[in-house]
Length: 301
Ligand code: HMG
Ligand code: MG
Image (cartoon, rainbow, N blue to C red; front, side, top):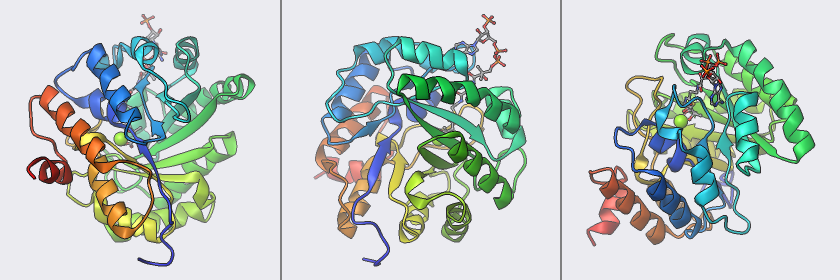
């Protein structure tokens, strides 16, 4: 194990939100609640539950309040929810959220397609969200999308990634997740991107978020772990994509990440067997095999 890989990594499970928001089959509110409750029993400490976005834009998340009300919140587990604006924050707070995540992008065009706002306009939208969250004692995470490429613009300058990540950090987001939304990154580029951001934002306030479109996600993660990142976003069963990024495939599967980290001797506190069972159960609801290679292998033993 490389000396610089952290001894412990925190996994932010995003399957119930980033996974399900882009699945053709809607598994229904009761199954979403069961999914989150099952995930709560695997040892995960951060489980993104849903998104209080416009139901016209993302119909799969229209039941956000019901999902949040229906889950059994386990002690010590955080259930962040996505909010795009003050209206989303108000809905989330009314539904009982104690942690929210705001999201913008390093690419102007992607951000317009995703949120009907330019990057600076979206940052302005977050100002009242951060202010209210501070007063309410609600934690705020921040996402930067398209950090390694944009479906509309192509190459994304590193300086743009750094600027947006720094802005979210300065605004008060406790953690910034750097998202390769369309999964085009490769390890050298992922490492260089993380190094550039970490020169401006402390590494312990950074997370990485890979999609596996080109099968590079685990390799990218390893490169970022070697740089010292200690927080990884992933989705059980490798579900998902992004509704405003055509061709973006699923998130890196949580089972695959935990298997790799277990093998590296990195502690996650997550029970791989329970996670893989949940992944295969979710895949069966979606009418297919799990996208996790590890989940598949463990299921056939
Ligand atoms: P807009 O149409 O410009 O909104 O959408 P608006 O302010 O003009 O309002 C229009 C209507 O939407 C109004 O209703 C509002 O009340 C309503 P009407 O009067 O027409 O009946 N509205 C809302 N309703 C519910 N909840 C809200 C809300 N806000 C307004 N929060 C908006 C702007 C940002 C709302 C919209 O573009 C949106 O919801 N976008 C979200 C898209 C999304 O969820 N994308 C996926 C998540 S990002 C992602 O996956 C990437 C990530 O995983 C990291 C990575 O991989 O890179 C995080
Ligand atoms: Mg994503």
